[in-house]
Length: 246
Image (tube, rainbow, N blue to C red):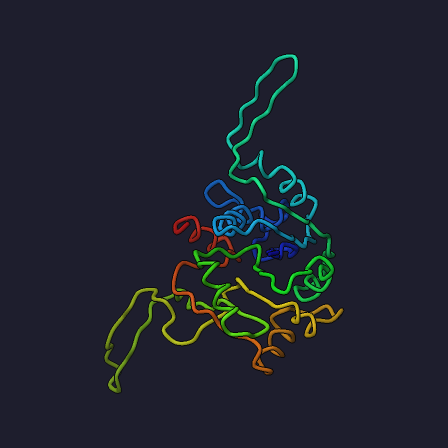
């Protein structure tokens, strides 16, 4: 089964850092974000990846081309013929890195790799989001509902402390940086049936706008609740937080 990692955006909220590298290659405790995503899916047995790129896509191509070298212990033996040995933990991994354009938005990026998605079901996530979501449970949840799409939904930690008052403005409780107690948001980590392409066109638009809204309107999108770890690495502050929890 194919796993799509969207990795083409500019990451403009990182300012200076993404002037030199694409956001999926930003390091978290010594490993690029995209490596942690790949390792997570690989731990559940999913090894076949499609990576639509755009901004500084050549750097992602170069990194994935040497993924085993970059992420393995290495033994080099010199003699008449040099012998190089890697760890075997990434055996079977496959990457298709597809240039989908620098200014392309997420729905169009997905549309432009349609020809490579032949199976009835594929998975998709963002190249800047990390989680400990159970991928096999997510897939089984998707199959059990018979809908076109499944979105992992999360309740993220609040940016500030949460306070509740009574009618006299007395503080009933104060909870420092809790998880949001009401409502859920998109946590990425999607599963789609190939019928999702009936909702995606050649328009340059965000997947999170028309396509997902249309799926929702037609009752073809379900939410898989994830209560565990999740972090979208959108700013330097997010990166600092991710380095603490991952």
